Each structure stands twice: as structure tokens, then as C-alpha cells.
Amino acid sequence: MSKFEDFQLKSELLASLHDMGFNEPTLVQEKTIPLALDGMDLVVRSKTGTGKTGAFLVPIIEKLEKGEKNAALIVTPTRELALQVYEVAVKMGGLSGIRSTVVYGKASMENQIRNIRRGTGIIIGTPGRLIDLMKRGELDLSRTRFVVLDEADIMFDLGFIEDVEYILSKTGRNRQTMLFSATVQERIMNLAKKHMSEPEFIRIGEEKVLTVTTISHSYAIAGNGSKMAVLLAYLNEYRPEKAIIFSETKRGADYIYNILSREGFPAMVMHGDLTQAQREKSLDQFRKNARFLVATNVAARGLDIDDVSDVINFDTPSESDVYVHRVGRSARMGKNGSAFNIVYEDEIDLIRGIEKNVKIHMSRIELDQEPYAHLSDSISIGARGGQRPRRNMGNRRGPYRNSKRNNGRGYGGY
Image (cartoon, rainbow, N blue to C red):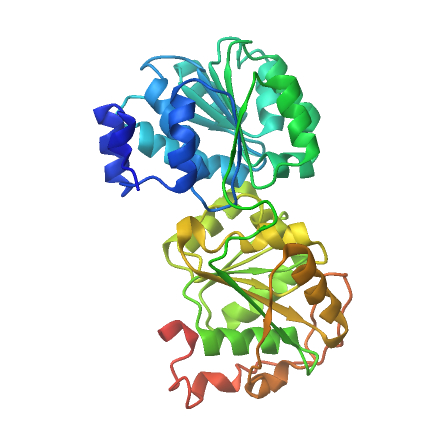
């Protein structure tokens, strides 16, 4: 394994990397950084959680000069990913004097314009807001030397291809372009041929392996008709350190969050009906002290949160690529992780389809759902939008709070 010192980086950048706890590059960083430092255009295929952010930020910060304006552009598909890249860029470029600015929708454009006018070396943003600023004449990319398309496959999935091509058309012809993606499909290859100059292709891992091998996959059947009973049984028996729980709908996410909160589970919720400030607060609390984040697919798109031990699909997705994006939130940077799925008896084909398409094996686990039988008829909003019958649960707190297994402490006490 090489060291960051082997890349002959500036002392300020090395000091920042060490302050961040980065001493040895990951495999994608080891393969990418030398070529990026040589100025080559790159198409990098690497699974989520392998260190792609550092793979493009290290060479960019190394090559930028203090005081340069709009020299580097990093395009991301979501606000959450833009914020995460920005946080890393600020830490990594601080000692080198490289300023970064993040721009995204549903936030104050005036503040973003003010930051751009002050002068910034790295612009990080989502396609829509970048174009808004460009058309207002506030963002000039004609002298941009570096362009990164981060999570390009997600960019395509969300329909941003025309926006991306417009942005690229406004940057300088002599730019260095780097494209990062978990999968490299024909549409990405076509983009590379059209907008990149003799790109070098870097492939980390096998194309057919869609998830990192450090993730274990399992499922349980809600035999009594209650996914909530299965969820509570799993949380108490397996005690995940930090988990994201996915619901297919916003209403379902609120339902799960309310039940968990009522039962004493330290949880936050995140979905599209929340304001940007509320979403950022949920993510901040999840990073700091909440053990659970209940979310819709908005959280599956590019979130990079350290130490997520479990991904729980309360509603198991019918599309395999959605499953891959969700479970990629765990097992980051070579760590181990678990993906747990809850299905009804008539949804077992979802498990079989994912196993076949993602080329994994899911182990069926049996859970003691009996302590949560009072939830057996509670409403559960599934992936296909259907509802299970509901009965009045009153103010019952659940027998597990004072069970022998929990010693009366409840979940929040461990």
C-alpha cells in the first residue's frame, strides 16, 4: 500500500490529509491520483464507498493556485452529495488556502452569489442551480480548468444529461475532465466520447459485482402481517450501531419515525416534504448522535455518512439498481456492513429478483415478533403503495420496554 507522500504532494495538502486521518490512499485513489496529476481525462468506475471524493479532490487541490477563481467545478446529482463534497473540500483545501463554495436549489441564491463574487477556487453544485447562476451572469466557467462529474450514473437516472451537457459546453476546451460512476453504461461512454479528450479508463472491482463484498444481505418475512413488528424485533435482537431505514413513501417514513420515536428509539426522518434546512438538520443529528435515519430514496442518492452499520429496507425495492444505491450507504471505505430486508409473504419474489440481478445471496433470518404482536394490524405503507389493515393501538408502549431481554432499559439505554 502506498502513502500519500508517494504522490509528492504539497506539504500543506499532506498536513490536511493527516489532520483528517487519511494516511494511506484507497485503491481507487491509488490508481486515479497519479493520472489526474498528469492532467489526463478520466472515466473511473468504482463502487459507492470506495473513496472517490478524495480521488478527485486531492489532485485538484494540489494543482490549484491560491487566489484562482472558478478554476474547478464539481457537479453532483443531489444537494446532500454537494454538501458532503463541500465539507471535505473545505477541510482538505484549508491549509493550502483553496476556497470552496457550494450551490444548490432551495437555498439562498443571494448568499451563493455573494460567495462566488468574493472569489472561490472550487465550485461544487447541482446542475439546476449551476445553470441558474450561469444564466444570471453570476457564474463564469470559461476559465475553468477542472471539471468533475460525480456519481454520473445517478445524474443520468435523475434526467440531468441535457443540463450536464449544457454546463460542459460553457467550460474551457482545455479543461481536464474526470467522470466518476458506480457503473459505466453505454450512455456514459457516449458522454465521455463527446466531451472528453482520450480519457483513461480506471475500473476498480468487477463490473458484475454491484455491491461491495463486505456487505452481508438478509431478509425476514412479516408473517403476522406487520413489518413494524419485524423491524422492532430486528433492532432489539441485532442492535445496529447506526442504521438507515428506507421507506418507499414519505407517509411511510413519517409513520415509521413516529413509532420509533414514541418507543424511545433515537431516530431522525428525511424525505422530500421537509425543507432543506430540516433535511440538513436531520443529517447533522444523524451524524452526531441519532442512531437511526428513516428516509425515502432521496437519502440513497449519494449520501456519504461514516459508520453506517446497517441499511434496513422496510419496503424492499422492486428495482435492483435502487437496492444497490440504498445498501451502498453502509460498508463505506472497506468497513463491514449489513443489509436487511422486510417483506410480506407475497413479496418473496422481490428477494429472488434482487439475488439474481445483483448476484448476491440473502440469508433468511427468523425473529421473535411475539413481543410486538400489538402492532400486528398497524398501518404499513409498502413499496407498491398498498395499505395493510389497522386497528387502534391506543397508547401502548410495547412490552419489550420492560422485558427480561432489555432489563427495562428500552432501546435508548444501550
